[in-house]
Image 1 (cartoon, rainbow, N blue to C red):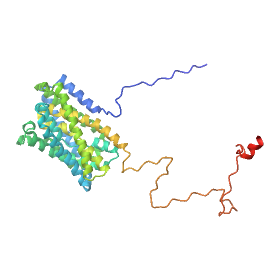
Image 2: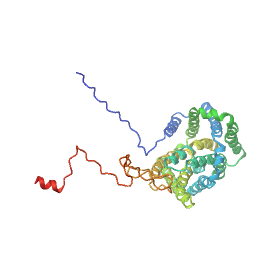
Image 3: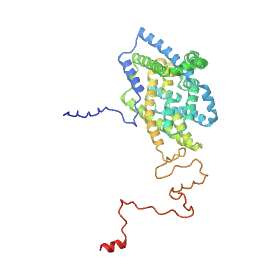
Length: 398
């Protein structure tokens, strides 16, 4: 007699709830910051790391240019009102709110943290998360793709110029050296990637996964360099826990205002629901992948505090927009998606003007020799089933 083996209980692992998306890459960024705090690069090592970081930034923007399809972006010009709305949200509404936050200095934010917050407002929109959340919320995904591409293209030029104009000396100003550094490290690699896309685009597409690791590794190197310089310069004493909490509160208000303005503003402009979803998710986000390399070029040794607000805002926008996207997907008043048929209701026809088809005749009524004008005979009773009880049978039994 064999004894059955005891059933194994599944091992329980601690996982964050589905509505709370914790980006693994953000955890890697936090680990890089901790590494820079414990083991900052100094002396000769700092020079080597800074040189490698400069090359990594140039490689990043070369890959951005080689992978970004200009033809697809130009094909989306037919939806120009939506794209202008997203660009206005990214490079007009965000900077205006950032300038309005100037009144929070120095009571709420330090001047260094405010520079990082204002730089956050100048960064272009992200592409991947905008597309993902728009798809979850059943919005206009092609419009989100084109809007993110337009924002990335415009951000290559607008973000450095706006940073130089609005941030002044914090971002190097409009000096000839600052502009030359921007052109050489950002624009030239990007344009080279665009020119060589015809020959290298296929290779990049086939090795997208490997190059994704190259992208992320390059950004981690940029973050390590920036925070190492901040540790050596001793600027972290400027960020107290109270200032950190106030920064989170300010960014939460900023995100809430932009989400409301993009959703309700797009409705007032006459966009339908699918376009409003694309505008909300593409117009309220900021790209961590594009902002971190730009900050290293614009701020230099002060880049550590400049990228801190952007890193916090990135995780916050993922968490909040994931909740909103799931809520939009369950929206019963979605006019862009027809209701799914249920077993109690027939499937809607593709052509509503076509009259309903008559029901199929009973095979018994169409037997040979049957008169089609006469009603079909009643069904024969089942011998196994009891006879129906009538008043006559009830009296006989009594």
